[in-house]
Amino acid sequence: MKNVLAINAGSSSLKFQLIQMPEEKVSAIGVIERIGLDNSIFKMEVNGNKEKSISDIPNHGVAVQLLLKALTDSGVIKSFQEIDAVGHRVVHGGEYFSDSVLITDEVIQTIENVSELAPLHNPANLTGIRAFQEILPDVPMVAVFDTAFHQSMPKSSYLYSLPKNYYTEYGIRKYGFHGTSHKFVSERAAELIGTPIEDLRLITCHIGNGASVTAVEGGKSIDTSMGFTPLAGVTMGTRSGDIDPALIPYIMDKTGKTADEVVHVLNKESGMLALSGFSSDLRDIEERAASDERAELALTVFAERIHQFIGSYAAKMSGVDAIIFTAGVGENSDVVREKILTGLEFMGVYWDPKLNNVRGKEQFINYPHSPVKVIVIPTNEEVMIARDTVRLS
Ligand SMILES: Nc1ncnc2c1ncn2[C@@H]1O[C@H](COP(=O)(O)OP(=O)(O)O)[C@@H](O)[C@H]1O
Ligand SMILES: CC(=O)OP(=O)(O)O
Ligand SMILES: [Mg+2]
Image (cartoon, rainbow, N blue to C red; front, side, top):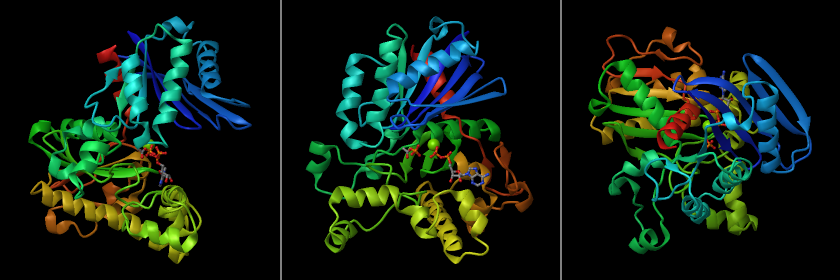
């Protein structure tokens, strides 16, 4: 048996799960938020017991120390020595990684080199890796990339229609993200359907705060809605998704903002937050939709973009065997799923409103006679991280 710690480090947060492998049993789960601010929050759940504490956690190094101390204090492990390996989510691996990898100095250098491509995510991931290296120098660590699963995309999907040297000199291309989740739910869908994944055409919809849709043919990602960065594709919580690129200089001109400031607006002040005018959180928006026109319109835009991607990927694969919904919204919102699926009957999608009334658990929501299956599958990026960590450490 091995104890694997799966880490998802953000700029101001650190999510963790301690997982017993190969049983895939979660022995502790938690999150540290507001790192670097005052009143940082530490939350952990062990065997159904929840604990929460507030203190100032100035950096990720201190957060890691606190996390390890909490794990030993709670008795899940007796000492740090019982942690056999640590797996880290790394958002951007560029074209260097088509699989997870054991972390070496060279790997860290490469992740650092591609940080420019994901300035919101990679530096935070690296901070997490370094903090663990310092405290657990002899424990093997593995990096699991959001981009890896999408490295199978053909050139025709990942090349932008731009001068060739932009790709060859600057690495400008579509990379795609949430790959760990798209891979997890496609493998699980094949198991549930009972058909080898090699024989399936799947469309996986990861709809959380960040959202992306992927075409998975024969178990491989062949196209995905996010792009060079996680800003592209469908409308998200605070991200615009696809817009006309000519808007950027136009907005700069009209508002006096710099390019960086406009990109910040597109990442943090757009999407559902901008459309609804009050929240990026889907629960808030659903609650008000009946009485608030802007909230209802936000829901419609959100669902319509995903609906269109499904049509486009079905065209690309000359058909689809199953559509999969996952992540916070995909797993929980029958309202959004209904809006996305309505009107897809022309391509053989027949879904049952009764079965669609489901939250947070695996369920087929199509009628038995539907040629296209529709499945809700809770994602589990952490267990994927733990599996790869065991395989590579
Ligand atoms: N029961 C629910 N009904 C509707 N939406 C939900 C529900 N639970 C969570 N969500 C939505 O899921 C989103 C967060 O998804 P999540 O996958 O946790 O995002 P991320 O990992 O990107 O932070 C939020 O918009 C939240 O409102
Ligand atoms: C890559 C990405 O968009 O991740 P998240 O949804 O966690 O923000
Ligand atoms: Mg997520």
